[in-house]
Image 1 (cartoon, rainbow, N blue to C red):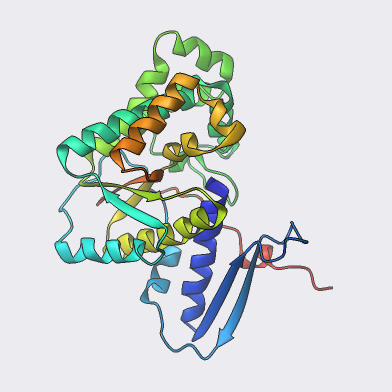
Image 2 (image 1 turned 180 degrees about the vertical axis):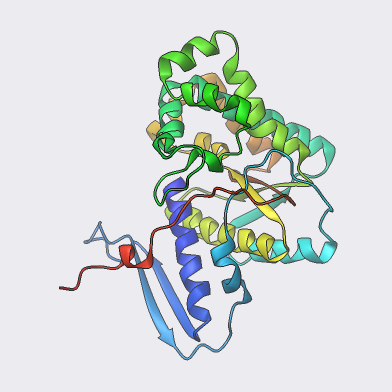
Length: 299
């Protein structure tokens, strides 16, 4: 699920960047059933003259994980800009959670999902395996997530690093650490944010999730163009998965989350919750590979 969302974001980035040079794109997901390893095909089309102004903001796109996002809130025109970004792909639905009752309900459900990520051994491993503790707290890295980009307060860093070991996490959970971390990771920052929203889809087939990734990228770049910062909370989509990945959750937790969101969203399926506001940029952000690392070897 998250891989398809990411792939959609990559495709949209390429489309936006190509427009800078007057080049259009035609993107097909899984274009040839006889070639299962061919995931995506992008054909370049010369002669497109409309330049997408979002291209300027691609290098600035980073997750800001600071706890406190401040205002001011968006104007109606700025919110309409983001609504239009999500409507670019018909399978997507952008839902704002700024009304107090809706936000409280969303935070309760998100807190349950985030708490489970620290309570469940498999989800715990997936979460911490992406963090490059070997890079230290003051360095970036080109692959994986540097700890310094997490926004963890200095007094808590040593304790947080210990929690990557499941025996330590399991012991801490006996004292309720998973509840505290679920609150700190999602509830608190989302409660403080000027704006909270989520991207949902009507179904979770490959094309719908891929298109949601494309819409999500446009939404994110639109936020950056307004001079604001953006943080996504990926735990929301975990329980929306079908098959064995969904069974990672405890049955009662999974059923409650799925049914509650379905009722709240008129049957739509939430994929990604996000918060928007203003904040100082982090000194450490996730790095990116050089362009040459993505190019095939033509020798």
